Every structure is written in structure tokens, then in C-alpha cells.
Image (cartoon, rainbow, N blue to C red; front, side):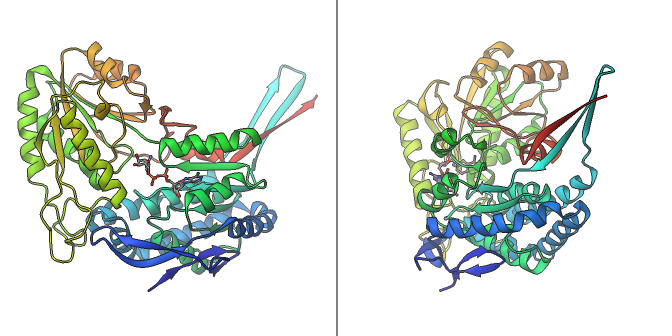
Length: 481
Ligand code: TXE
């Protein structure tokens, strides 16, 4: 059985304690590989390698760093099909989704930041006729990057690319559930000639490897994407040491549909925003609000379209809907569907595991796309993040009412508004507490814009200029003239 090892000081190294964790293919429920179960010693070795690499890497001209990042992007692109397949097997997501979203976006992350560092400018401020200030931006040093399982390569690249582009060296801890494409990234970095120690990847559990990275005294910057509860643990550990943190956490995003919206666009887009990656995208619109006059029509058309989604082996080209990532996620989804029934919800479609989608996948973690109506905004199913293929649909009567509904959870990551009335869209976008509001679209991304959440959806922003700022420390020099 293949074993995934750590990437430390430019080489692939087995974990120091010799322990490994099983990796399960979600579509089959079978163990198909193993990954290093690293300890604090492995993390310490990775941090040391990153510390040693920092002086040279941070002083390398931006054009040279840029060329190396571009080579990484090129190699990712050349290996796109293999990577997409690996990601599909590792996560249970349809191959066509990995091919069209995860891998191209990972390539773009490296390409974008390779270009961005060539265009970075610095600031200078003249203070009346007394002084000139200029602000230097220097890399932080060794940064810790912790990423989740839902979009493993993309979300890792989203952190690694800006961190190393701006001259930091990094220790990354990918999710232990889906480590395969991170391992491929390590191999690609070696092939691309990334100097040893600039990026180190330590695999293992959050409790051991992840916590050791957060606590390491030489790592003063942490960028984390994952669950809100984990984010709280990390914030607590980082606070007494005054570490700089960015937390990208969960969401319970509203998808708001006015009666004047173009339903021919809204229905397919809402299907994607509800069920993409089996509902395991932090940006999924899990609460759908439809203006009263067209509520019945929406429900009918949406349920009909949901029933047509093809659940199947993620590796089949025709599959729209694959497996949940783990038994734990499947149990969580099942729990919330039962809770919805207890809370008075009506399950209009889905709500159960499908019959075996194929002989190969008979023990996989599949769950049917599920549509629920009849629940109030305050019930637990509408307040807590499920992170699965479960959406609730609720009617609303006015703009004020839907603004209150949208803001009624502790989360504030993203929202979608569907209407032909753009004045209303602007007005409502301003009122909704979320880091991103999409109007007549969903998950359209521009790497230059700030990305992150309000309230319990996170702290700090990633994305283009924000990421470049996060990974660098400003220092002002004031010269009297
Ligand atoms: O994520 P975790 P889990 C949500 C979603 C899901 C829930 C839990 O609701 O059901 O989170 O998922 C590492 N110190 N999202 O448990 O635990 C861990 O090893 C340092 C939303 O799988 O947050 C992994 O690398 N690191 C989300 C990473 O944190 C720790 C995507 C994320 O794992 C750690 C995924 C610790 N104490 C889940 N504990 C999104 N916003 O996209 C864990 N980790």
C-alpha cells in the first residue's frame, strides 16, 4: 500500500515516529493508502528547515521567485488530469468538478501571485514640509498554513502561493483526510526547483501535527481554513503568543431569490450553489429564500431539477453528485436530516442514502441531494452549518424581512441575490452581513478581491492584495527633512 510521507528540507521524509494513518476512498469506504501521522518532532524539523531557507529566499529577487512559482503552475497544469483524478479519488467529488474547478484554480493561484509580486508597489507619504515616510513591507518569516479537505489542492495553493511569493517560507499541514494532492504538490515543487525548505508539508492529525504547528514559537503567522470550532481552538492557542492569524471558517449562506429573477438562470445556479461538491463548499447557499409570489413555482422546478442530478461513481464522466468525504460527514448529514424532521420540516426529495450506485461503490458515503421546506429561520437546521447536500427553502414577503432572515445566523461568509432590480440588489448587498455578496451569480471569483467572512465565519481576509498584506509586515521609516 502506498505511503505518503512528509516534505521537509526539500526531500520526502517518513514521519520520525514511523506511524501512519489510513486514507479511505469515500466512494468505496476502502482504505487505499496511508499518510504520515506526524508528531511535534516532525513539525520542529520542518520549521527548522523553513527557518534555514528564509534568509536566502526572502532576499531572492522577486523575478526569480516569480519564475519558480510560474514553473510550479506550469507543472500543475501539465499534470492536471492526473491531479483531478487523484483529487476525485481522495475526496469523493465528481472527476469533472475536480477537473473544472479545483485543479485550474490551484494553477491560477500560483500564476496569479507569481505575477502579483512583480507589480507590487510601496507607499510613501510626505508630511507637510517636515518629513517623508516610506513603508517597507517585509515577509513575516516562517508561516503556518492549515488547510481542509473539501477543496484540498485549491485551498492549499490559495495559501502557499501568496505566502512564498512574498518571500516567506512555510510549513503546511493539509487535512489528514485528503492528503494526496498535497503530496503531488511537494513532488512538483521539487521538480520545479523550489529551493529546499521554502515549502515544507507535514501530514497528520490536527490535534498533533496541526496543534504543534500553531504552538511552535518560531511560527508567528497562521493562516487556517476549516471548521469554526477548530478556528476557535487555534485562536485561543495563538492569542497569548500574539500570533497573527487569518481564519476562514464555516458559513450558512443565504441564497435570496426575488420574483423578478430569471428562473432559467436561477434554477441551475441554485442547484450548483446548493449541491456542488455534495454541499461541502463553505460558500454553498444552504438557505434558499424565495419571494412569496413565486415560491411554489420555484420549489416545484427546483425539486424536479434536483431529482435529475445523477448520483454515481465520482470517476464516471456522467456523475453530477459523488460521495461525502467521510463516514463522519455522512453521519453529520444524516443527523441533521433527522433533526429537520423533528423540527417539523418536510423532506421533498432525498433525505437518505441512495441504493448502491455501483458494485464498486456499494459501501461509499453517498447521500441524496435533499430539499426541505416548512422550517422556520430560527430552528437548528437553519442555524448550524451542515456542510452537506441539504438545503432548506423558505418564502419571504419583503426586502426588510429577507434582510433579517439572511442576517439571523452567527455566520457571515457569503450571500447570493437574484433580481432584475439592481437598485434593490445594491441596497440589500449593503445590508447583508457577509464577506462576499454575489448578484445574479454564485462563486464567480476574481483573485484580486478580498475574501473571507464576518462574524463566526472568520477573521481577516485572503485574496490578492489582502493576502500580500497578510503575509508581509509593514514597517514605516520617517525621515525629517
Ligand atoms: O475540519 P477541521 P473537519 C466545517 C464543516 C465540517 C467541520 C469539521 O462544517 O463539518 O468544519 O470538519 C486541522 N490545531 N468545514 O473536522 O477539524 C485539520 O487537521 C490545528 C468548513 O474536517 O476544521 C485540518 O487540516 N489544526 C471548511 C484542518 O484543521 C487543526 C472546510 C481543518 O479541519 C486542529 C472543512 C487543531 N487543534 C470543514 N484541529 C470550510 N470553511 O471550507 C484540526 N486541525
